[in-house]
Length: 310
Image (cartoon, rainbow, N blue to C red):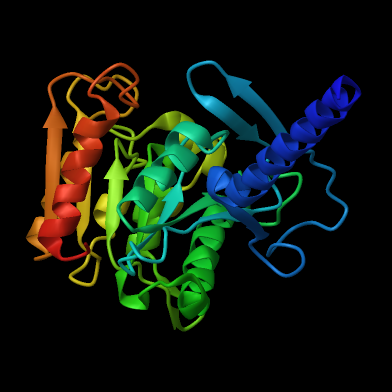
């Protein structure tokens, strides 16, 4: 029956194609590993209704996905497998000097690493200050971080999160945002204190001596007043209510001096707040070449276990 062979081969192709398609459909959510939701129902606070600012995305060979001109904040949800879930959650604030967001390297990649540990992770695409689009651009990132904390806790049951184990993580300027959320957590009478902070080569201060001038200018404008600079210099805002923190920095960081982490750590200790600090001899800003991700992230995980968050 040679005339049947083509039909048999075609049938086999369709069967193989069906199973390949079925496999992709079943694996799709796992491969994507995320759901994206808007941070607010409706426009974000203090947005100017007539503003015309277009968000832009590009991909860099080293840094991955970079996003600028963000005016519509969102939360990317990465949940671990249910049989691995610990209840711990981390909201991740990518860095970029309050002018860009490094969504891959300092966001999604870290979220997936947390998922492997059973930690729910939420990458925050927060608004970047745009005077033409916002009434109070300096407050927009903090408003978004606080809204992210609120959302994660509101959906705690749905997402398998323990509201008492909801921390915040930030890189560089994202570290400044995370530290600001950890030192300014009362919003309109609502306590939005994160459970803990993970600060990776963070901008902490806006002072002339150690602050990162680019982040300060992007957030506060070219001529901020002294009261603004002090309010956003988080080493000056630590109290005994500030959440526990893990900090890591490089001693040769020529962009954000390690004194940012050192000054914050000293204030945490002075106020009796549990904290851990590691300074690498080399690593520059962002640990582009060294130390390896597994090295510094491993120290972060060790602290989380030691502190009881894992």
